[in-house]
Image (cartoon, rainbow, N blue to C red; front, side, top):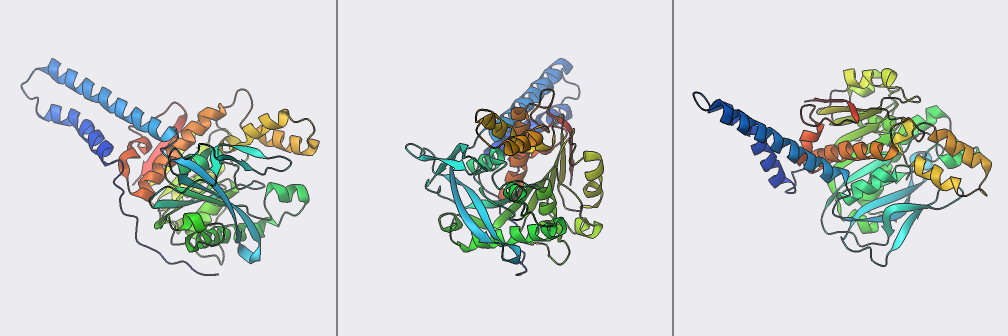
Length: 401
């Protein structure tokens, strides 16, 4: 296995500079008013401060909306295959920024969920890659998951100017669960971070399937996102595990309901910006038993934590849309339907956080963090600051510098 080498940190992008300057000016207005008001009209000072606060709130709301909604790019979808750890073959999904307006007449993308084709919400096949250079993000699915199981997020990131690639961790997918070919958990825990490193290698090298997007990847800006066992994977990529070293090309990681079963040494070795998002009502990866150790041990800064009120373990996936589709297809195997319904019990039932609301806040926090860390654009930092980034759906928002 090749041990990656560290590159320099990404340089700032121009995008967002005007918004950042505007927000900075607004945030400073109250202080300037107070500094200059000695002996002046207190009612006028109060009015100015109130107006400034109102303006700040409006700007923050506009920034939030900008990252919660789809970005400026059309979404291209492609596929590839990578040779992963121990020579395993890993199907890979690719999402990329495509030229705006290029979807007319294009073929909508589909994802091959066992037993049916799942239509993409907004992705299309064979679209031209947009001009420019874009950060690379690797998405790692959870235990018994699939590479496109969080397409609500991976498609969203592509629309905002990220090239996203997601390998199936063969031996630990939904297909393996049904086929009885699942690998032992200890082996999977070592394979997963190496799978990510080898997927990055293939993307940067323009290996088969990556030819169209490789030249558009900014090799100095790489992030890893993972859900559940994939969250463990993101942490392991950054901190190393066993004989698998950290991938020092990775500039930032995001753990979504991350299983944090790494040893202390691995967590203490994570020295890059880290975002962890938790579901307050998670019954599979409980916050109380998984959040404290990375909070205490991970030295990477900024370290951002966001707890989502009422969310469940599958709030970070597309499982609710799968359940809706399967309900209209009674001819499918009952075992498949039961498996999906079992997963959907953690995120899709009455009384749980509405899945659209969960996806809104996940897109918001994740996109803001990756724009900051992989583009060097701090326009959206206010959304990750407890003083300005509060949202009714967030039970907790913390940021450590």
